[in-house]
Image 1: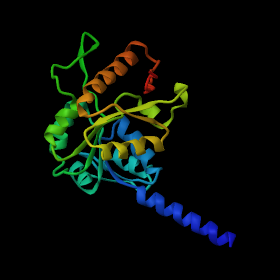
Image 2: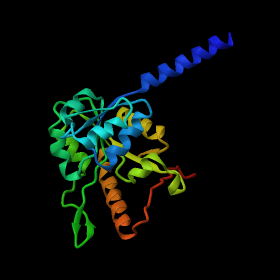
Image 3: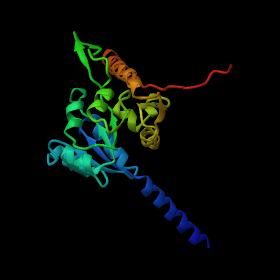
Image 4: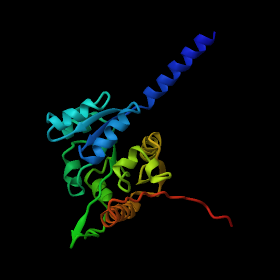
Length: 234
């Protein structure tokens, strides 16, 4: 009887993992993409890397270290996935999403920052709209969530060197999409903090610039962000 119960428990656990697994297109094979792709794959998700050069040695090596990983053009990867991670330079975000084809109903995680440099300093861009808002305007049917732009790539995998918890700060207009991104973050040890609708992503962009500016001026030190939302007592 104990053996039957044990096998049943293993079967149920396996089914639960399978049910929660997603196919994720990782668009961009830079620092963030190469960190989150293998990390999410280790949690049971299917990863498809979207690249302009899917047959390059670099991408082939990345696929090799990603369980059940594969690579394709960015458009092909996006069409096969339910979740799309944008990990490209901030200046390329809008054109990239336009090149992906129909992304209606797909979750797009915007992990990008746009940096304007002047005299070696990080400056604010001229536009009043955030990158995520520009992205949403370019793909109105997509479910855009701004996340992963206010931390180092290393902290996405291992929070211990920072000496405490690290917040996955998120914003977006669709509650279900944010819940899915929160699940991804929690599975790797991050603490999701939903700061509101996509309009709030303007402040995430500012935090992203703060993170980069601090890292440049205090190298090799880094700073990670932990938020503590609470309701004051009357």
